[in-house]
Length: 280
Image (tube, rainbow, N blue to C red; front, top):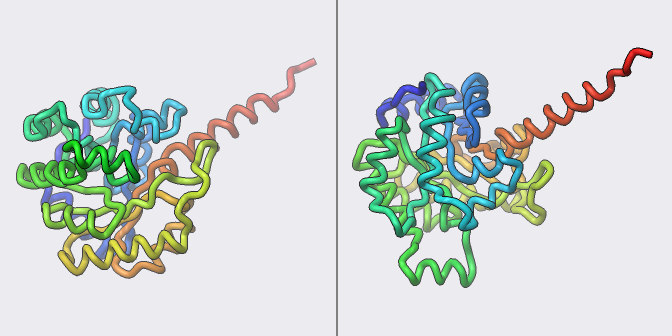
């Protein structure tokens, strides 16, 4: 069973990695076996949320934005019965729907901590929604600022906090709430069997990540800044982004951390077994 980490302990572990010149890697996982081997590979943080769960059922992670399940209840159950038992010595973070209008988030955070999570993040996040639907959500009280308030409550409780932000303005709100790690989110990912087309490319992505990183570091230099999504599919892509964005501390992998490896390895194994000829 994963041990519970104090916030300051996690921050110190991450600071040592960055200080040693090693980028942070946070694996977003939807199954126990992914969590187990992400830890074996050296992931600094392991995070689960409803998007990752649906991804590991063979669906698009974007299914997590449809009204097909209770995101916050799912994460409690998934963590307690699958993710936390598979991890030993890596902080495990719960992705929560901070804008959930059916919950008292302060009480829900107590349940999250009791299960054994060491921190929280805002996923699914309203930051990924735009247009009229975003305006309708904001105008009716289901706002990004609710996610900010969740991070503020979690920070006050002593939990490690990290937050998706799609703009510098969203990132700054999270910094003001006390967040430990801002994740510059470029939107849905490309690649694999169900990756999106027309995602944010590496050039535009570097510019967006850079704008968020500069804003965060100017406001609070001690906040870790990582990135996620868009056309970043491989370690080579991430290496290129890290080289172009001063102050960027690492990468958060979702599909690249579990869906791509599973698609490739399971397909290869099935083909290899089918290639064996029958005797006679």
